[in-house]
Length: 114
Length: 114
Image 1: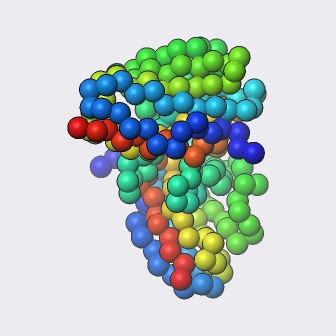
Image 2 (image 1 turned 30 degrees about the vertical axis):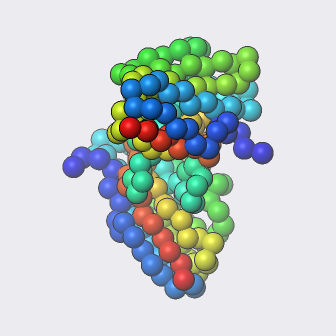
Image 3 (image 1 turned 180 degrees about the vertical axis):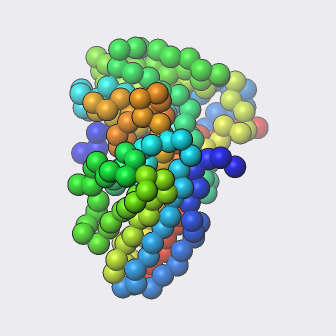
């Protein structure tokens, strides 16, 4: 099976609410994780990353949480805006700290309701 | 625009023809990656270069796929004897090893094999 996957294919939230997108991974050797956002017709856009020696990292309106015990990763987006509508992918890397090929999950389509 | 660029953005070809795609990375980036993305899936890693050296190519999908980066700057991905199953988005990404693990993606080349 896939090393990285997502629990839900589609997530619909009201504008202004917080969004939580989940990701499960199966390879305990993974030591680097990234969240990407992909809008229709565009390449993936880097959002935030986290190394396995951390359990939380914050960016602008986004927070990534890593739970190595249950091999779970989540992306929290605060006060979602229409521009947040996109497909979100988590990706992992083993050993290279992100400098080698990434393994992506299938993605979650985030829909922002007005 | 100083991001990753790819050419062409769209390619329609007949089965059995050869196609070549070009990627120009961010100018100071020494690592370059190729991925394939099919509809509804996350990107799938194919190969990567550090400068002109191809450090990983075992993930190329078949011996019909080859990639080059002769001068350590732009790269080409060639698919020989295209098949309908090769229809996909081909993404290129670049990163600056040692200082950043973030891979920056280009807009992709959408290949349609008829």
